[in-house]
Length: 539
Image 1 (cartoon, rainbow, N blue to C red):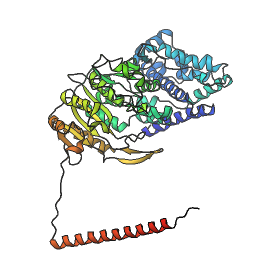
Image 2: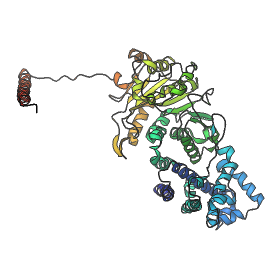
Image 3: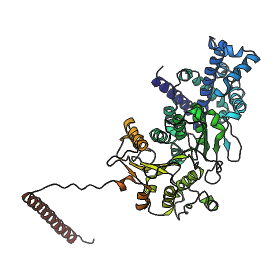
Image 4: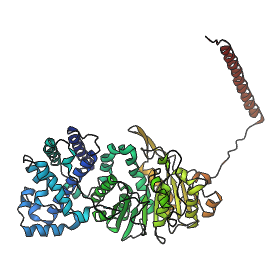
């Protein structure tokens, strides 16, 4: 089975689930997102359990009817099976599989007696591994009572039957067998229709895969042996940055830690961790306000990645942050007189990341608005000064415009390293790279693999290239008022062209002739305007 078929079949499943929601009045409803993602998750863990069960139990591997063989296992055989599967998959009882539910489609009260009860039981029995904590320590569940999103009780059985009927049409098992990492493509497709929710704020949680790949490839030295690494994102969103970082390090060599205030994105991150063999990190996913009350405030991390929200209203708790001088050393943005949504919350995230970075071997990559790297004063400049004085600035990459389809803000990526070489700081101007394509109503810049490689190689090999990258020292950056913009360090070249006296005279005469012609047109236009004004009368 090819990658294209995997992607096609999975997209079909998502489209089918959307169709069911639309047929029951939930199309574009706020609850549609929960239903799609949770049913998708149930399908995934069901097929993952089948795959793992067949690996560890011969009776199931060779069975013509998996469901029947599973139900015929003795209690002892089932116990051994669950033990051998371990944390590779959630544990499902025979009466919790999709095949079992499919066999009960015509039963009375299907929604409550079978569908909702099954999902609730799976949540409870796997809560230790798959629940997400809030800052207070309270845990959520994997699944809601999905039938309750249908306001008409008489339609709930039919709705849940329709969902289950779509789940039996295709299996993910071959994907696990071939170890195909399909999530990146599927996830982008899955959330595409939800980026406009809440005024488009959810789009802030989605980072283009090209940017995530570049950040991970620059942060992680492929020649370095890494074990038991702690990776952190204080504004994790759906986890795109963390997943790419984990792939670069090796999933078995790192543990993921994250915080995000959004329940929606925390649920997507949980799904992302499950799909990327990082389920053991789910207990470290915290839903909470990182800036006001960080769960990991006293932790230090070896790797930190972040694409924080740039502008957000935090006026309700702004004054409380003033007390935290240790973390917010450069200051707290003031509350504007008019638009509170324009408060630069990203400046707080940068300071928080610097505070949480391991002082001996910490590395970080942070997406920031490009205006941050050249601001002449204020909190922005204080933060940049601190990066130079603490000797942690490794380099900066200024990305092409519209690299994020959801925003026109130009972005740059800061790379910090506790072992940064202050005599060789690399600044890259990648603004001219990429191809512009239409993405819905917006335009988006796509980087080719070669262009991604060019950025990565320049940063990792400290390569200076005319009008693209430059190697500077910390002292040079001080002399430029702590500017991190590559363009301000490029050599200015003036080209001289030899010209004869005769050619010079001809050029000057041509300039004079053109100028006289423009002056004549201007005088004619002035006369016409005067004539038109003279003809105006009051009636």
